[in-house]
Length: 508
Ligand code: C2O
Ligand code: CU
Image 1 (tube, helix red, strand yellow):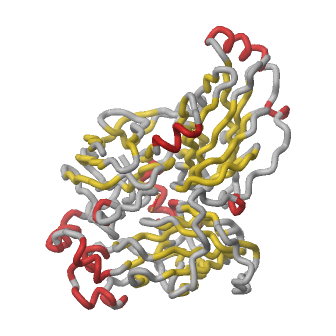
Image 2 (tube, rainbow, N blue to C red; image 1 turned 180 degrees about the vertical axis):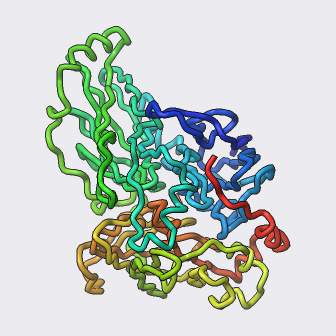
């Protein structure tokens, strides 16, 4: 395996993805930030220097297991302190699992200001078997003109008793409102790697007159499944294969559509919910001619399609339903107005708050007490799970909108999902359940997941709507603290520096 090294200098740059110029977090003077790419099993080393001047930062590599490297997981207050202005930090971990992933800041609702990009971990053997000619990374996202520190300041204020937040003002594909064209050669196969890297919005994707074969979902290879449309909530990814037509007589459109499910403050009139790109065939010239012909076609020509229900996807490895359950954790998603504080979310008994001593440091430095949840700080919402346990989380959503829930360090099986309340019946669970790392819990509904505690560490479990996370919608899994203390080397003394590093986030 190779070592793949990235030197990332994070600093402010000006960008106008939708025509409006604003400061964004760039890397090495550029935005959009680069994709990270490696083969499964490679060692990825990311040397970060924080040149922001006025904000701390971090990077989380969404989808990576981080076996034995929990300290490289990037969650501020969870596994590290924020990297202070002028500071640096090295992330080093194995590229595992393969899949379509992404990376983003995990410091106080920072990534919607631009610190988010795709991360592709190739499985060369699997990809060769699929016979694709080319791979196309496609990042779907939403965008604001205001900066997160300012929006969070208002959103988290005591006066916001209902906890609503601003709706996005733009819709982006690969961080622009002008989606790129795909160039197809007749008869060839293409792999499109689609990631929803948005702050808030769920998106759907389809290609006019082409069927997609889903071969991967998050970091899981699946038994191929055909569909004309897929839907991705914030944080989710799909890897699809598209077979190009052998005799195209026109070019085609692809369409990314944004859902407004979570837009509690309505839909801004400037916001284009539907973005279209082109699929161009053969040579550039022919593509242009076909594009002209096609420009008279309207998106309304796209036949209405049913979006794939991810529940039908079975993992290629055939992993069976995990059981029997050793620990059942019931979580209910509540939003509460705390007088003098404002509206907050909780998924345990209180909202999660950023820890001055990251919970990983506590787990590593407290010996036997690390098994005791009361050892962890106020607002850390810790769940201690022991090595080898099969953990079941049954989630009940009491809000009229969905929440995409993400677990770090694992993929989990999705064993039940529906509206209302789960009846607890385990007789009819799927035998080879869907596995992924972000799952939607439907509005006023439930989702039940299972995973095996095989990765000692301290892992975030949170909603991937970044405003919800900022309002406390997170918990912490303290996984196998006994093994963790033997297996990982982080100097607990570094815990002391978090407070000193703390820089109040401000807009630029
Ligand atoms: Cu995509 Cu906790 O992260
Ligand atoms: Cu949420």
